[in-house]
Image (cartoon, rainbow, N blue to C red; front, side):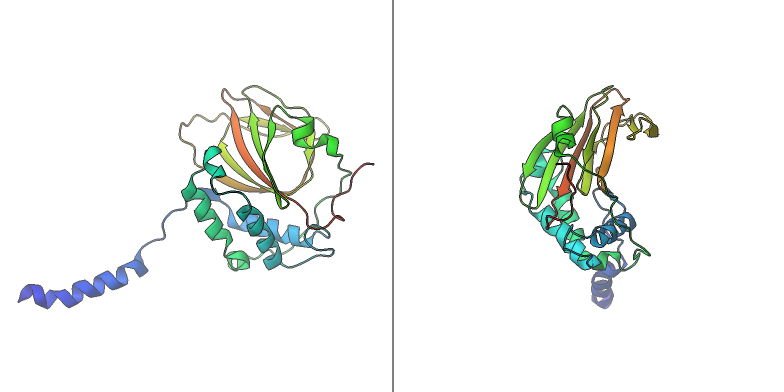
Length: 233
């Protein structure tokens, strides 16, 4: 009798337990407020998605469609698990709703620079930049910076998401040759995937100061109009 008496309470506990359970941890590090600011700036930049500025939801849809353009089977070749990328795409699928808790308070247009195609990463610094996939929506670049190597100066005229597969200590040099940031050596063995947002970059060079290769996948988003990117003729 005691077992049957307790059964309704057991069933009730099973039914309400999922509501109490903490959400499963994401298999990567991703700063949502930074992503929402990235979307706001992308939406504010005339010519990148539409001839004028646009909305956060439109920018979010633009990024999601670009990410979905990358073949699902390609990520494993770049040492990014199916679990990580499928979870990330589901997170991006929330579009503007993802930013409802931390909406950007302002936006800024991407800085204007006279980008020269000859200075793009895969052209000006081919040792560290390899085009891994290309479609009308995205250019995927495999960035591998060998230990103690400093790459030639180059630019990245497109906005991107970066997937840091294996970090390394490095120093960033701006267009004036000034070291503007440095990170210490990475001593771990099983790094956690980190996903960051990156606006277009003017002339820069990065020096790997560590003892192993720095490995990154960058997904560059191709503008939908021809009015965004200034070129030198």
